Image 1 (cartoon, rainbow, N blue to C red):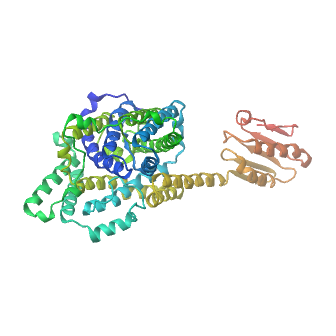
Image 2: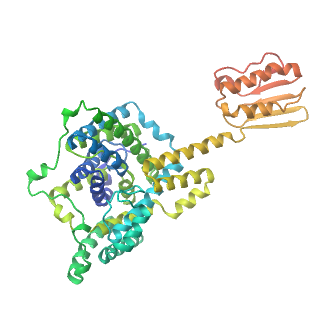
Image 3: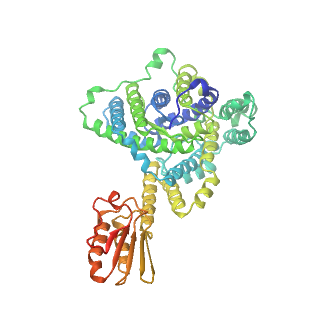
Length: 526
């Protein structure tokens, strides 16, 4: 169960973690907004609201919310279809209302039906995608937005061909140097970070940002041709005054409340955002070193409240997102204070120091995301799943490949289908054993019996010879469905004509709706 929120107890761990999450969130917020065809600032609004509002209302200690790459296609199509961006904001707000309703009606239970192999496959796939999608940025090609998760890109390239294009046509010495030094530092710092003293709280990604800014400045002095230009740096909207800053926010167009397209978009966003949030939160619970469990219904309420506020302020729809959440876990966060602070840092930085943010090279942030991706998809994870057997390993690998070659939601759907196929296949395995010793025969159900076990039960009952003494052992079951009960009853009724005595072991009356009948003294309950 979630622990009580105690910021005074955890702030030393949460403060540095929140800075890391803010640095990871910044390019992703801007990238998702760019890919969605929305104003760049709308992505930042969603990130801020996801941190402060959702963080305050959620019971998840480590999940971080913000604009999600999985919604970009839906958002882009919706904005194109709407009469104005303000009409789309109304759809975002209405989607939040629907999510609140989902939470109040306990819709969060859906998350519990997802196999763990699919959840870990999703995490590993996101890690691989982070690495692959950030390689072009590390090489100096920044034509694709930072939060891109889809295999087939809008520019006609895909995840792999984009890397080849970047390596062949767009490699920039300055980007490679900054990304290389940053990655080397991050992996070194993971091992060299002191266990005691104030330096143990120093966030590696913050150092990487400093390396990137200072390194690019030095390149301008020592090798001007290698210095990264405006196209390779963060691009946060800069307001010249408080009035200009407040002008970056937008209100929904409530006059579009009768527009059917607004309502269909709202319902689509509510369903997809809820599913993505539930899956992400469940995955974060598995990443949590303390293995705390999040109230999924409360999470839907928090996500819905966040979308209501985001829509009212001019932001994109938001969900719980794995990349930011995993960075939060990896940075040692202990409570949701880190999530809330990351939202506050985003707000303060875009309001007070946007020009400073615009000095950060995208190559440095790419290094942070590559390191985060590696931690999500370490080789040890594949080895561990392999050792658990094919029923765990195959859905895990299929989920990874499906997400890698499609997108997040389609890939999860394919992974779920394969996972459920293995569940069904396991139920088709031998559930009933048969043995005879002379005239004494035993039929034992090793687990619950459903309609899919009818053939197996009939087959084993057919092996009982005339005049046998048969024990039907159902003591290991907690449920026997009506189809199998009728088969057993029919056998018992005909047993006397064949000289067969039947005994049934197990508290059958508590396990089935209809009692198994014993019409004569030759068939009785044990």
